[in-house]
Length: 165
Image (cartoon, rainbow, N blue to C red):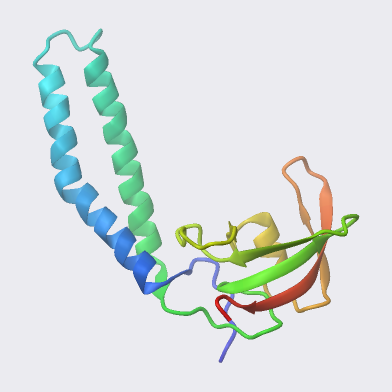
């Protein structure tokens, strides 16, 4: 099995892919029709400058259209199935245990797409600062990543096993 580090690929289970595809179909079909009806009904109430219902419906329409674009991008870049995985090497689809520098407590999470919600453990994106820093590392490796405040935090890889193993 070949390891891959294509940053544009989003690995999804068949269940997650089907759920996102169904959401996209709803939003592009009935979802758009429903919001268009809300906008039309609000328009009929009169003056649009002071019409709260109209502005709320237009804002909702904007959110729906943004979600449609997000879903289209995710699904276009999705690969359904299992990400290439090898026990001991951090990558998408792996349950990873780490220890932060200066902290004796271990943290365990699933390294996967945020769209894989429903996992019984915390999910960290491979595209996050931490996920990017540890992707491809092996058990025993240490690395660091940049925090939002600009400081750097060290992390040690304790374990990496395929999710569900």
